[in-house]
Length: 274
Image (cartoon, rainbow, N blue to C red; front, side, top):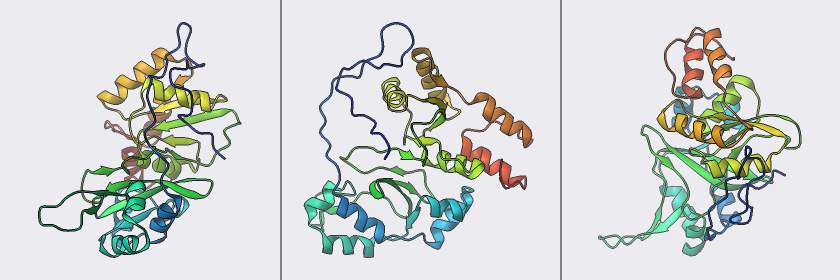
């Protein structure tokens, strides 16, 4: 069982900061409740990885073995799946799942609406063998979709949190999947966004035996947050040497935004793994 991130009392100081006053988590009131597990399990059970989804993953250099390992799915058209979910569960349960919302429509149609844009890749996140969260990625578009009104859960690899070693912290799921493609390792978390200093503080406390590596995107936001986190915490490591060595070994000279771009550049050169 993986530890839970985000369970500390509001305002409690973090214990792994650099010398001086530790950052504190802002006071906040938890308004989210866990999604109904039976709804999430039923939704996953209705999904498959369609040919369109496989084609999209191949374009992102994510292989079938990785897709199977992380139970990746896709949704081309929502009609049948949404109809089945509405037949099986009341509207309140569907809304509580974070996958549906109620929105009044001018034409008087069904106000219960599916939140994810389709077609999309659906990435499930599991805890104790059951889905607790879904991340959507629009096929053919830039849209990223998250459930509404339920706690975020990072995509977490299968590693022993009590063992010493590196823990790679990615912004997005596709970078984590790319890391698995390149290394076969699962010592990672994908946060579905750029971590704040406070979020990083939660993570280093949950995984006290791990050196947390900031594998953030090579862009202005990623650089700025990496600098802020490294200024506040002595245990924040940046994968500059690892990525640089990886690019040098495969003859990549062009700037790359993230690890998925590096993976695809490596594949274009005919290599199967790093």
